[in-house]
Length: 156
Image 1 (cartoon, rainbow, N blue to C red):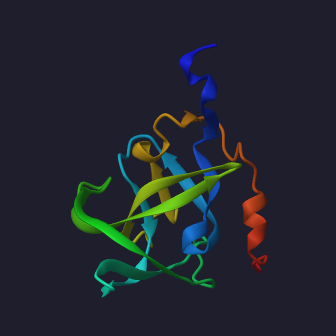
Image 2 (image 1 turned 135 degrees about the vertical axis):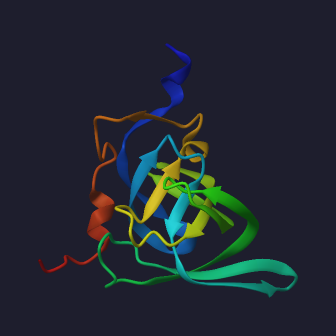
């Protein structure tokens, strides 16, 4: 057995959950070209509670839909400059939360940004999957689409 035997193989896109944020499912692009992970967020509001920096924000978890809004709150762990795939440099808030992919759950850092014009509401970068997952770029949804059933069917 090789050193990768403990790693889960995933596709280039997967459904994940973010249980600490109350997000039961979000379609995610697994992007080994991106160092950091990002989620579509708006109405971003940093605040302080009992001396702890926190942040509130809202997420539209479904692609091309604003029908569902999920309000989230998390500890604010950092603010960083991130260069997007288009080359634009942006200062983003960073949170730490749990991600669930299939039967595995682990902590990741994720930046908050407006991904309205992007195909996916969330990007899972290489830092989040390092030493945990191998990516088969020719496949999708190796963990299945059961999380997609968390939302009511949309009318076409």
